[in-house]
Length: 120
Image 1 (cartoon, one colour):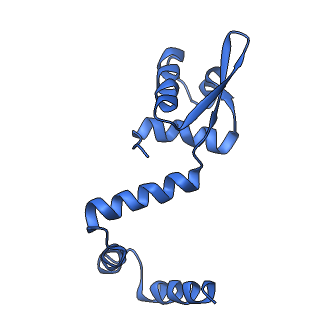
Image 2 (image 1 turned 90 degrees about the horizontal axis):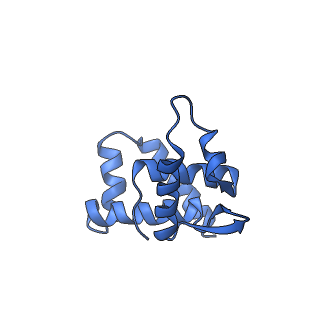
């Protein structure tokens, strides 16, 4: 799965939350000053080229819809981060979170209990 820019990920968020959309509808989600229609249209077409969106034709316009779920994107992104920064070590990633105090030891114990219960 290809990576997304910050703006692409923001736009995908709208598709994941709202479902199929026309580019004109995307504009409504932005505060003033809104991005130009052509700018959004270019980004949406790029997302389709990357395989994140497909479209359905309605007259002379396209309605786009997500073909990659938010969960699949999160999983692939997490795997990419762990591969790139932690040498494919999930233990290394968790260890880093504990060392940086982004997760407490108690939270880690709770996570272990949840995993153990899920595997029963």
